[in-house]
Image (cartoon, rainbow, N blue to C red; front, side):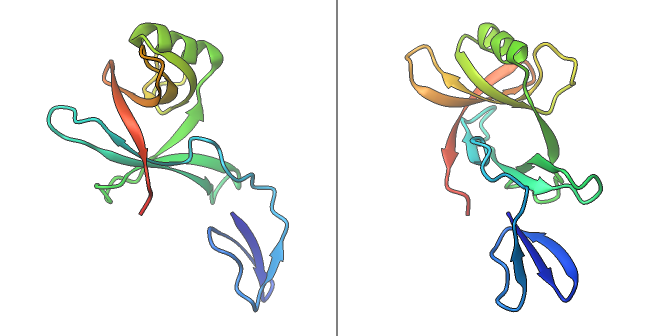
Length: 145
């Protein structure tokens, strides 16, 4: 994330500042390890592609993570929350994988919130899982286009 000043106007953008503007040090931290694009395994015959983006909220001025459906541009996205250690543990136990990290978009107080989780499957392979509608759907990282 780049913080740029041009003609007295401050902007945050994903690309480097233009030569005619001044690049400022930004407090926005780059790179939550789960930022990126994912494709879920086919569920009901449909594979979904999603992107987790780190963005600056225009109203609160804080950095947030949002989930977007790549193939459904009309879907505006959901703000994600970092799953608590208890939620990550409970998801791993419920769906039988060694969960290490999670981003949730389900109910904040839910013990098993929907979201994207990273962990190891029963074969010990590192992977990602979308927990949706009480199911864990395997996903893989893909290149964002």
